Length: 134
Ligand SMILES: [Fe+2]
Image 1 (cartoon, protein in one colour):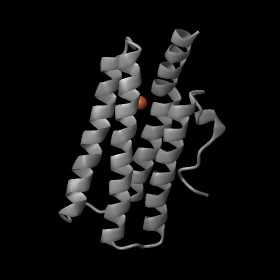
Image 2 (cartoon, rainbow, N blue to C red; image 1 turned 60 degrees about the vertical axis):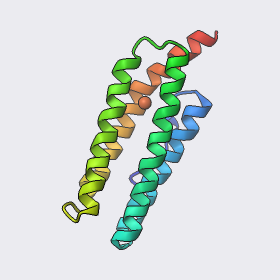
Image 3 (tube, rainbow, N blue to C red; image 1 turned 90 degrees about the vertical axis):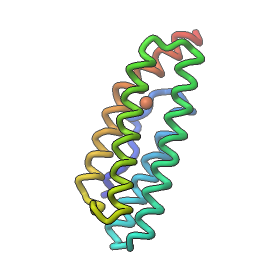
């Protein structure tokens, strides 16, 4: 079974955020599949790049939402986004330079990060947005 399998429990009950999270899972799953199929570095780096680009897009959307609605924990949440972005870009550079290989550890790290971030940090945002909309 796929490592990156979307489950209903990941829903934060905000359609735009949920849709983007699903897409993130899908892109991460593409990376896993490419690895499992033993795809070459060119294909892997393209898949990784798609995931990173979409992650940046998603973080920017979430940050815009938080700022628009004056989310009190915006700064803290942004730090987490920035940390992940920096980390994956470092990895991407290492991979491009042939210093690091794509590994199951990377995927596991992404999986843990995504499930934790979605399940706790983003859920808080969604609850806040809902309370604002009410
Ligand atoms: Fe987030």
